[in-house]
Picture 1 (spheres, rainbow, N blue to C red):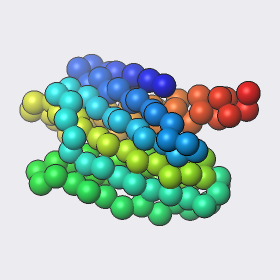
Picture 2 (cartoon, one colour):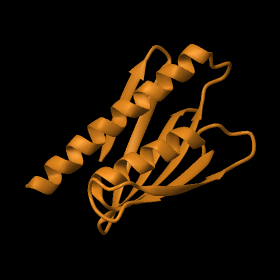
Picture 3 (cartoon, rainbow, N blue to C red):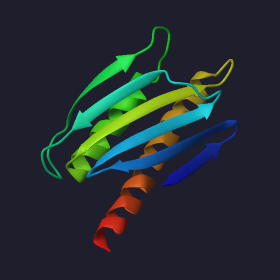
Length: 120
């Protein structure tokens, strides 16, 4: 499963791979790389997810990765691993806000597709 969203020069890509009932998610944009990995799990759909992070020094994708992993895990009641790497040279504060908003859009689109897939 793959999703993309963009605004201005910020273009993000989200790829999802099923691992049994769990998910492996890759979020990237610009010069793709691995900057942060978040792992979250929830015991059942609708319950609070707990999560943790691994972050490479100097990278700032941690908040995006953890927010996405916890949201997906809580909604689906499974374990979710999000690997994130986004790099745009000279990114502005406004563009960072765009990347955050696009991440939320991609997460919503992913959830909707996964729920539809499960309902079939």
